[in-house]
Structures are given as structure tokens and as C-alpha cells.
Length: 399
Image (cartoon, rainbow, N blue to C red; front, side):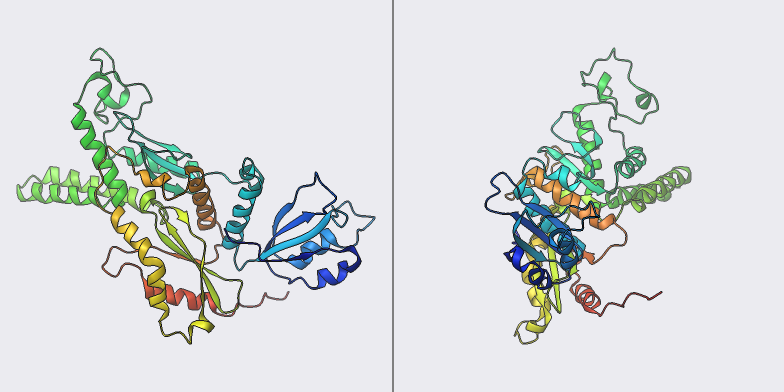
């Protein structure tokens, strides 16, 4: 956990001097109650201007104003300067979770993002939208909203023949089935329309599609189209070509951040609070690590290059991505989603913070993913992004 590494005791007699000593910069701040207020609890907040915010809370009260004043409450202040909204949200979440383990989500307005889940723990899995992570499932996301996940899920399911119903499968031949089975869009395990291994093979195709971003199905259809063309079956080849266009439409609708969660590895670059520095947040299987600081002024005298330093930080993440890129057993869920020393709730929180930043506008900072090429991480692009982040910011336009 990133500590609140700055602070001081608040004394009413020297309040003005204390406020003048605070930097006018973004920060996460904890206002601690006086020792004689036994039942009082600390106040955690984040602000874009530490001096101005605490000046309003701890400065002399205005009798004509109804604004809350904490001069008689505060006994000390601890804070951490932050260089970006992403870092600020991450630090704020860490300390809110430690202060209020049972209610921090409500206090922060933090809601787990929408995911598409293949529930592989059941005999006949189906895909549906959820916000919860549990063992025994294959997850794909995060999406910006539940509506966005639903918009993806409908056309995606049209490409396969897995069930969409929520009933308990009993394999009863007398069962009438549903409209999807009548339209040949479902293998109909409900009335024993398929064998168990047949359905498992179709689930495997679904999982492979999600794991490869649709490339697996495109390759499969391309092979079938080539075979149909070589056999001069041009009608079938045309039908397969139209099906490939539908697959492409589904693939193009997948946001850049959305992928199978156990392969959601990335690096988020943000301007750090320190001068001439970039904060590197490594994301491993959807979990955000504490930032690694690239201080370029200090690195200029180091014998190692910046790329070499980045390799030491990111290569372990790349190895996770390569391991997840292999073919998994479609009947087993990726257990690492709740492993690595973190809980499922923590993973949901990290995904919520990542999705809130990624889909937010305007978005500060940049994000990169390990590539499938032998080079792995795009180090040159990462270094160019660091240069952009450290470039002087344009001053605000005056009216």
C-alpha cells in the first residue's frame, strides 16, 4: 500500500502558518481527529489543490457560510501528493479499504465493472453478463457499462450454438425446447439434442474465440471457405464469407481493454508527483501493482538503460501473458483469477478503477499491452510515451 508519506500536527495557534506550508497540488489527505475526541473517526478525501481544500476546512470559519469547518476537530494531517487522477484514485482506494473494510465501496461510489462470464463449473455452460468474480469461470472484460456488455453478448452468441436459457438441464426428450433450438441456434441439450462431448467442443470454440479476440473463429472459417472454393462450391464459400463479415463486426466492437481476464496484462504510464518522473503501473491479470518510479534525472547517471530497467519490471508480467495465451481446457476455469495473494473482491476493485480510468474522458496517461511478437512489450513506444508525459504542459488559455 502506498503510504501517506507527508504530514504534521495541526495546531490552532499556528493554523495560518500550517496552511501556508502546504503545497497547492493534487493529493490524497487524511485528517485525523484530536486525541481527546475518542469517538471521532478520521476523514479521508482527495483533492486537486491541497492548500485550497484544507484552507476551506481548517481555516478561520466564515459566520455567514454553512460550509463545514474542522478547525476544532483536526489534530493532524497526513497526505500523499499524486501526479495523476489514476494514481490518486488508486491511493484513495487503498486507504479507504483499510479504514472502512465493510463500506468503502459505497463511500467511493465504486461498482465492479460488467464482465461476460462463461460459467464452466456447470455441466452445460452458458455465457452471461455479471459483475462478480468467482472460481470456476472464464471471464471476458471489463466493459464500460452493462449495456455495452449486453450489446456485445447478443451478436457474439449468434456465432455459436451454446444455450442461452437459465433452466436446469435435465436432458428430457419430452421437453419442447425453446425458440433458439427451433431456429437451429442452440445444440438443445435440454431435450438431449446433442451429446455432452458435442456441447463441450462448442464451449471450447467459444472460450477460444474470447481468448484470441475472434482470430480463432476467423481462421477456422477461412479454412472452410478455401476448401469450399477449391471444391467449386461457391454458394457455400459465399455463405462462409458473409459469416466472416459477421465475426469481423463482433471483433471490431470489442474495446481495446476488453480481453480474457487472466490475460489482461498491461502497463499504465502516468506523470508522477516528483519532478521529471513517470509512474509505471504494471497490470497483471487485471490486478494493479504499486507504481514503479522512473526518475529520468537520476537515471541519466545509471549504467543501465531505461529499456533494461523496464524489462526487469515488465518481463514477469509478459511471462504471465504468454502463459495465458496458450490453449486452456475449456472445462476448467482459470483459478488464478482469485489467486496471487488477492481476493476476488480486490480483483473486482482493481478492474473497476482500471475501467473507470480507461473509459473516462478526458483520459490522462497512456496504456500499453504485451504484443504477440517475439519482442513482447513495445519498449520504444513506451519510451516515446514517457517523453510525451514529461513534456511541459501548455498553460491554460486566458479568456
